[in-house]
Image (cartoon, rainbow, N blue to C red):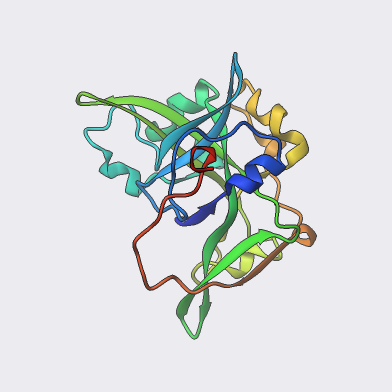
Length: 220
């Protein structure tokens, strides 16, 4: 399951013709880090800084976010954590440069990165929520995933076994369709990303854990 990724850069934001991101965010994101979420409102495309890991309205604190950063599309309406947001069609995307998964060699995991061959950022389907936890208003989101046992790239990741998962990539040309979707039935979007447009390689985890802020248009 995807628990670590690199968000898009300010150059990629410009290349995609997206509005500038008006806040800082980490170079790499892990569960319970803030990250940029793109969604559509009456004003058009908007960015929000949200927690990576969906915080439902009934949560007592943010710790649940360490377990809710991925959501299976098959059970969105069955899980109390995700059901309300799904029924209200709170869909967005998490634009990324690359995401990381574990590939096992001799039963030992290695961190591999998955990215587009052309260097463009791509959109991962997301479900978001707004909740009040104590006196704090928290915006949060989770990546929606799909079965990947038949996907020639993603089936090579995760622990050995029959359970293989992948994030759902929303094609650039379907971004508006996804962000405007007003139904909990998202089967039209459940498809594996085209392998010929992507590549993967071994990307060791940096030894230095300190995360520096991503440059935004305020830094120019």
